[in-house]
Image (cartoon, one colour):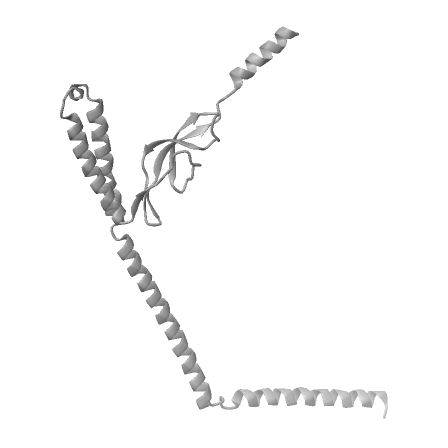
Length: 205
């Protein structure tokens, strides 16, 4: 067999192979789809059922969480608005104590004591409902609970220490009801002191 004959045979075989592949592909396309077995249908149904049950469980948990939060914090806005009553009582006490016309009034202390009783009753009601004041004095400033209103120079304490409470803040359980308005420390500027030291050094020279 010559080389040309070999090439011709190889060409024919290659064409036959391609034709066979085409026929196989055509048979697969024309073949009817495989019918689902009962096991396949059961598996699909089980997967759908599991997904549905998981969604229902998630919805139940969300509902319980929302229900619990509504129960615990349903009066959140009302509680925050009620804090103004406490603020006004404190202002009234300070106002009475600083009023020159009332200082000589024999009944002033009785009036203030009566107001203090009302204040304590209000604080007690707050406490029963999970509303508690934020302790801040001499503590490190925390933006999660405090709102800085001013800075005060003080070298006796670390910078950022709360040394003045302007308005008391409150928590409602683990939520911030109102931040505490505070004054915090900052280091005293020592420029004047440094100038004096420099002048003394110059005099010695």
